[in-house]
Image (tube, rainbow, N blue to C red; front, side, top):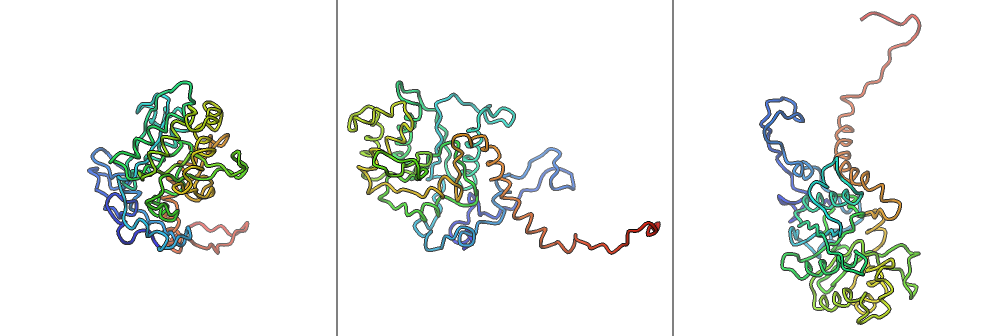
Length: 325
């Protein structure tokens, strides 16, 4: 199934076949501009061939029917950071951190698919570790009318394939209307105190359900020991809010929490999480996610026109074979 058919073809979709605007330049070279308006780089990306979910990912049309139409701006992609941030941080020559590249990937992905992108600087809430501070913002957006779904992403997690929208992913993961929270599983060696594989809060998908208020109340209050006294152990100890979710909250809300496969959410099928020492690979991963939108089409065109470019030489090459032309 090629994910360009049906209701997903639209101006703000990655699958939109754009008619690139002509430059005001007088140059005869389409890639050269001497002043005037340039074509939108996002339209260039949208105009490239769409993803074939069945051929490339083994996802059938039946598995995508939970969300038959694009949700556009009702999906909110959220990044948070307690460190100060301004637009200068996103200049190519001034990108200060590996995580800035992750934000670039998330912004690009959101813009291509028409989603809402949010970057929130969270307050320092002493004595809590900074990552706890994202929970009130995640809850606020989940309850807002602006967002039907909130997709929180750590900035060291990137979308590997920019073509694949979130709607077929969420349908494939069966995120039905009763699911308040979905999160990817962590590495199998990361266990909670009951020897169950931990959740990794680097990817969390939320929606407003009848259980959302209670779930977030218990998660936000977890480090203060109100319902879970033992949760105070993770005020500043790793894995902080992730441990609160893994050790306590998921056991009280199992019916409305969906656990997602590690290989699909953190190890490269749809997304890749550059945790630990792998963070240095984020810039290259982001560049590849963009380059991979162009390279397959270029290769296909080259293969299709190979006979026009390729020749087999039969000229002899010996000491006496040179003949002036």
